Image 1 (cartoon, rainbow, N blue to C red):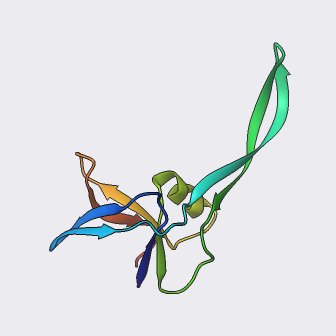
Image 2 (spheres, rainbow, N blue to C red):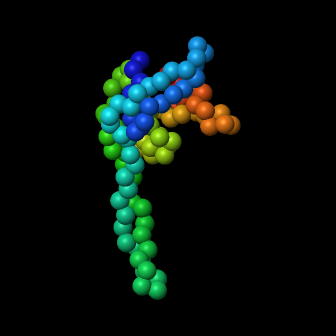
Image 3 (spheres, helix red, strand yellow):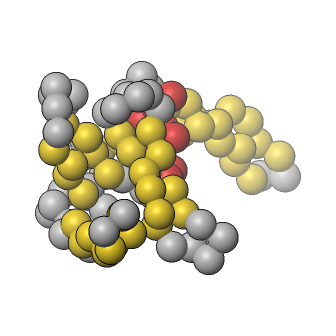
Length: 104
């Protein structure tokens, strides 16, 4: 299994043997939204978020997992992707595992 880091920075995580560093891949998975004007109040436009997508996320490929931000993970999961993971952090904010939406 291959793990690709689609965050903008090196990812450091503790494993059973010590610390593992995963360099940034160069692609950054980001959430993009589209909006629709649905009304106005006091001359202030009211927008509705009508579509979300994750950019720079490669198509699914057997054996690949993609490390993304927690927000990108949630959106990708809602869109049916189960090949994305995000950091699982302890109470101090240290990455101690990976969170996924299926058994890997």
